[in-house]
Structures are given as C-alpha cells and as structure tokens.
Image (tube, rainbow, N blue to C red; front, top):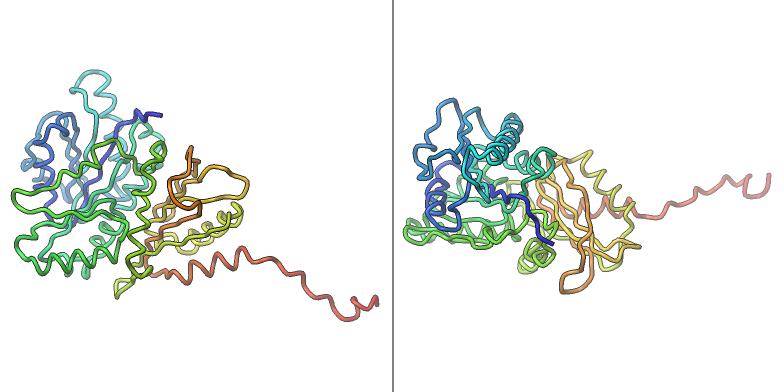
Length: 346
C-alpha cells in the first residue's frame, strides 16, 4: 500500500544550533528540489527567510510568534493554503514540506497538530529532526526545557559544530543517547552535513503504512544498550516497557487514560506496538503529551518476538511509577470480605 500524502519534515533545534545552515545544504540537493519550506520566527520581523537559499513562492515565513500552541492554527492554515495554491497552479508542484521552527519552540503542540488536525489530512508527518550544538549543547539543555524537549521527541538528532569542540561533542552525544536512546544520531561539520536519507524515502512518523520501518521507528535495541531510565537533574526519563503475554485492551486504555488525565504534559512522547488479546495483528499506539493518535493495526508483525513494546519519554514521571499504575489497574478486583454475622447466615 502506497501512502500518497505529502510528507512533512519538522526541523527543530535551539537558537544557534545550525538549523538554517543545515536547511540551506539540503535545499541545494536534488532530493529537495520539489520541497516547500515553512519558516517560523519569534517576533514580528523575520530574518531567516533572507538567509534561506530557496526564497521563492514555495517559501513561506510565519512571524506571528513562537510556533507552538498559540500559533499552530496558523501553521495548519498555511498547510491548507499551500495545498489549495498547488491545485490552482499558483505555485509549482511540490512533493514534500519542510517546516523550520524557531529555536524557542516547544515541538509537542506542533507535532500534535500535524498528527491530529483533520484539515492537514493530505499531509503526513514523516520525521522530526533536531539540531543540537556540540560546543554548548549540554549547557543549553540544562538551562532551557525547550531544548531538552526538542531532543527528546526527535527521530533524528544532528550534532552540529563538532569540529569546534570535539570533547564537548562527545559529551553531548552521550547525553543525547541517555535522553533519547531511540533517536538516530548524526554529526555535522563544514563540508560534511548529513542528508539523512531515511528522511527522504517516504518514511512516516506514524508508520501507518510502513510496517517494515516499525523496528527503526521504535529502535528498542538502542534502549537495550543503556539502563532503561535516565532522569539526571532535568527530570526527563526514557525507558521501554515490554510484555510477553497478550494484554487486555481495556486495561491498556484505562492505564493510559489515567496517566494522561493526571500527568498529560509530562508524557512527552509514547510510541509502541501492542499484542492485544483477540487481535492477530499488532496495534500501533503513539502519543505526544495529552493527545493520542487513534490506534490502528499493522498488516504483519515485524521480525523478532511477538510482544508488546512501549517506549516512553517522560518528564518527572518514573518508569517505576508508570509500571505501578498499570499493575494497579490490571490487578484483579477482590470481593470484599462480608461481615462475620453475614457469613454465618445471621
């Protein structure tokens, strides 16, 4: 089955991490020749648009503020208008969209909008790509929660300027592996900017029609090389839960509902495959904070053991607590002991 929706690549990263340099390089490559670009800046006057090599009718600048929950309606409108202009022939045909966010953006609401808004149904979120600066990445992530979240939700992380501080670059990569083991790490330096071919092959963030990419989407193997939970002093943890026996859907639904109701903003990202009782096919589950994408079934199980696997990236929410909530919910209800007089037939 071929997904004909337009792939959208979300390029995020903190201020000064090299997003514009990376984007300019990509736009000079043949693979991006038919790519529309949406640039967001913080404030009323933008400058990034002047720095982007591809400044034509397919480049749109949003300067209404930080691309997050307050402006995501503008983003959705922009995508809708792009498609209308494409159909009318007002702009040349495009087969992909690249969104570059301001460095101050919390990516969660943007991802939510791209995953759930009905009016962007002609698009699909393909990959989230985050740039992290090698020399100052550690201090930035320690200081700014936005930088941490940008790295935590990424599919691909590009560590930039590693030529300027090799030792710091190594420390940054080690921290990123702890923060988001499931992400694929890349390096960028002058003359050696990664193209990230995996972002150009039609991959889909929600793996709805690409079951062969499920393993790389989950990247559970990456977690196996680390302790499952990492919090440091930032409160952000990453861990994977596996269950060998089939699960009851009502238990899973109640578990996740409880977590979302009480701790929705702390659930930065959840994704996984579930083996549900009575279902022959694997069920895909994913969420960003309070919003859960509707679950759906893949045609086939990927290679490897048939088991439920859920990857969590959370803030101030431990693996032990998440497990405990599930254990409590699926524990069998105990019938209360009747009073002694009742048991004696009184």
